Length: 226
Ligand SMILES: C[S@@+](CC[C@H](N)C(=O)[O-])C[C@H]1O[C@@H](n2cnc3c(N)ncnc32)[C@H](O)[C@@H]1O
Image (cartoon, rainbow, N blue to C red; front, top):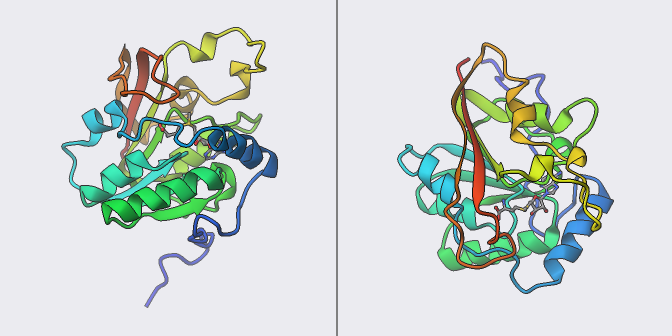
């Protein structure tokens, strides 16, 4: 009998929300403090672009990158998906796990940064990253990690706020050059990928939450052919 996982990195630790963290402590602390500032940061509803793009798909294995307070992961799990929710903020993951218990669904929560999580390559039929704040590095590690996680035949769905990538650096210190944007990921797709959707469109705005003022999305949906 062959071990199909031989030579592959170990599966990520299925961390309880309070479990060991794999990633940059400074990134975790920054997001923890942002979440801790409010009892609830996001709307609690699944993102409109996820619902629109995935609502008709048969459930399989999904990875929600930067799952925040868990609304998307829980929505997927209630529809029968086998979901892994990956997030740097332990504060957010505690909330996500509580919401999942209330909803009566199981999600595999991973407390890690995307590039540090040690995800098994080509393991997810859907990799969803909704407004992910992924740090950009010269080796494009986050972009490559998103692509590597998708199984042959699977989908990458990357959604961001339109116009953020061209914003001037803010007084707040937000510099778009520090983050990964959808065009950087599509630029790395080779002949093994087919871009199915790459467009800007009006956002189904959530009812409340910190991001409610953003009006348009950039939606990248691409299928890994092999
Ligand atoms: C703008 S929020 C979006 C949260 C959620 N996807 C949603 O739509 O409500 C970005 C999320 O990415 C998480 N994050 C930041 N850096 C990350 C990284 N390196 N790996 C995984 N998640 C990260 C943040 O903690 C935060 O929860």
